Image 1 (spheres, helix red, strand yellow):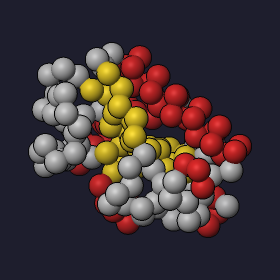
Image 2: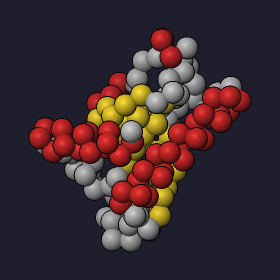
Image 3: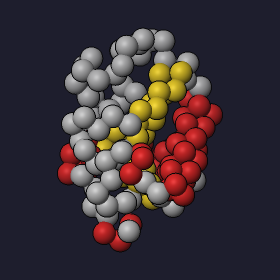
Image 4: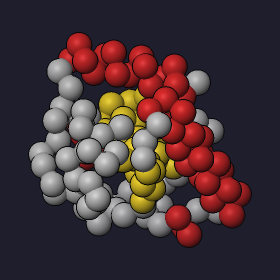
Amino acid sequence: MATDFELDAQLDTDCLFLTDWPLCRVLRMNDRAYPWLILVPRRVEKREIIDLSTADQGLLLGEIARASRAIRQALKPDKLNVAALGNVTPQLHVHVIGRFTDDPAWPRPIWGVQKPQAFDSDEAEVEVIQWRDLLA
């Protein structure tokens, strides 16, 4: 149940909290290089999408689409990347990333290309407000 949900410590450290949707906690990766949202289903001890109930799988797909539409409508990326890797952080989470042909990693995956470029505290506050408006 969502009431027992605890966000993985690494996700909590690396991300900015945006909102809770019916299934997922929505986070903004603290990296200004990419428009990068992370959706974390608020279900205990889930590592893979197939670990979710069929109903929750449907909710997750809808929330991935909602996050993807927000990025596309606001920023018009050249491509959207959606991935549920979890090789380092085992808690089920889905990355939704807007990609541009001039971003630092294009056309490769974003991981390991450069260290995250964290927002300073004022920028983070503005970023959170802007994303909350886009996702409402």
